[in-house]
Image (cartoon, rainbow, N blue to C red; front, side, top):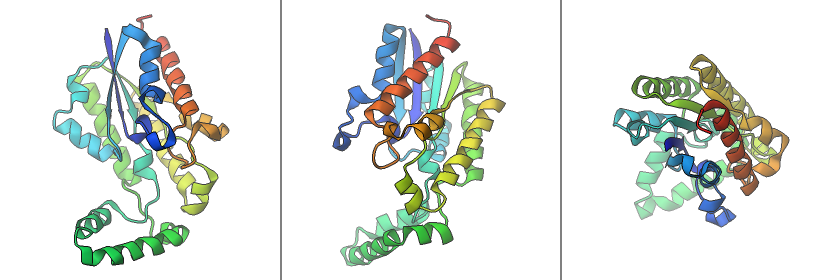
Length: 238
């Protein structure tokens, strides 16, 4: 039996409020398609970024030491999405929110910034991970995989988002395009297989939920099939 590890964020996880349960995820569906020939292991965390994942690798992450035959990297939307608060600001707000006296003030700040989101994301541009850092950390992750394993690497690029998100947040679409360019360059430079999910979601918005970020049931189904077909072509086990 061969092992496949999926490294990702909430896009590969359940969302019960949107009626997305484990059996609906592409992780489960891929395992079902592969049957007993492969064992699919998800190393996924909500709000996961390349920075977090690079730290995990340094700390002897199981992603590497489970010796997978294939590693699927699905990271990017958390890194590139326009934010009202940077990671440091977010941590500060979270910390001081423990004090009841500050909660109303924090709530008011969030409401104002949310109301004028387009303005703040245009003139105070923030992402959790800058383009430069995204490229640096992604390259580090790939090098660590190549130096410590014989794993093949698939990279799933960032899906397109809905018109609502593009209108609410300045440069949301442009961010996705720029970060996807980094993914394409990394895949080509390091002989990784790029899974172009962005193209499909740009052509078919039903693959994404109403939040413009997470996968719909159909999106999970399609992505699992894309991965399956690429695995059949790349891995001589069928």
